Image (cartoon, rainbow, N blue to C red; front, side, top):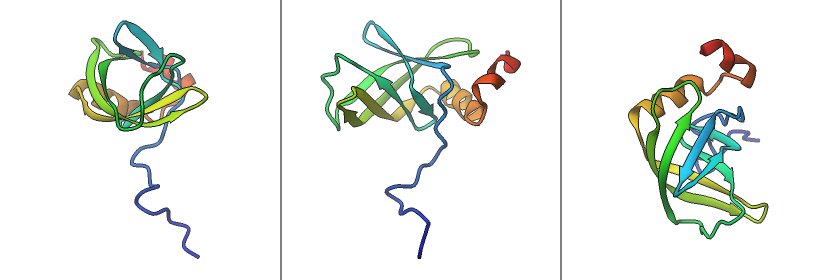
Length: 113
């Protein structure tokens, strides 16, 4: 039996659930439920987004100077209500920050300041 997931189900990056990433869409800020250098998931009670919709905004990462910009595509919209967004473009400094912090747990962030 082959336990290796197919390419469709294989994740490029680990998801981190440490509450250290905020995305700003329009005038509203959302704390990411989980995040990686590939995208994020947020609770969005007034979401009118559908899978495939383009979305853009700012990203604010704890411990990183300056907000970044992102564009992405909605890849999941659940009744919970959550949306998951896959980055299409992410500011270089934000991508680097997410890559360097991906395996840190919540307790480790305080040590990086």
